[in-house]
Image (tube, rainbow, N blue to C red; front, side, top):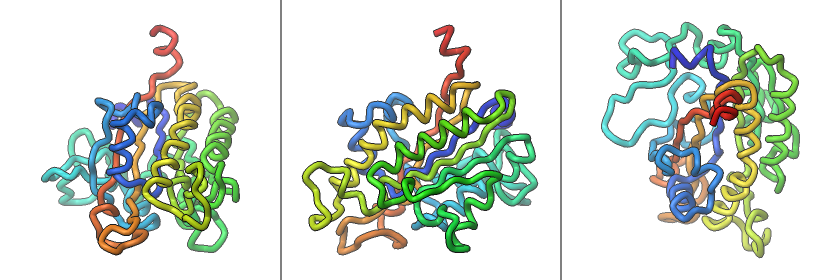
Length: 273
């Protein structure tokens, strides 16, 4: 990461509440082609979330504790605050002296921008300002939130505007918290109603909706230079498994999440391809 920080733009996308089993199933069935073409080997990596709900998980993620591979570790981290005795800090880790990655990247000259989704990013109550307050610039409006059937395309439009307004020589760290997977998501499945409610099937339909628009986000973020991208879930959610509904609980479907990291080629490499 020490070769990437400073040379690449950086994109972190959290697909809020996305379950690993649903993500893996849709990739295998060819139902998320725009995401799958960037997944290493065409598959999601199975990992464990650092928290069981949005606030806890993102506090950990911004401190460098991305979802952990589910095989025995220790696993070297991409980013880490300097901490004596850290077993997950390795030679390739980008180590910083700030308490969070966002402020570290700002210190490296990056413009740090948050495009929020769920309520923890809405800048309305004090609690909804903590996470977006880490960034130099944050955006949220009702059309980005969980109740909007067009939330992700609205978020992508704002991200495109952010990229277009930034001077070409300024590096960008863009964080997008995608709210479309979070309940309510019934409106993404044709035939579903408010009365029938959310289900594993509507959750899958929401991921298909995100896939239809994520190519625009990748295109914007790789329009100026190469971009290193991380796309993952912050936690899963239960739809009746063992009697559980929702998250902020210790069930397998909550702790197990999909993860991917990859490089988006910049305009020069695209032109030569």
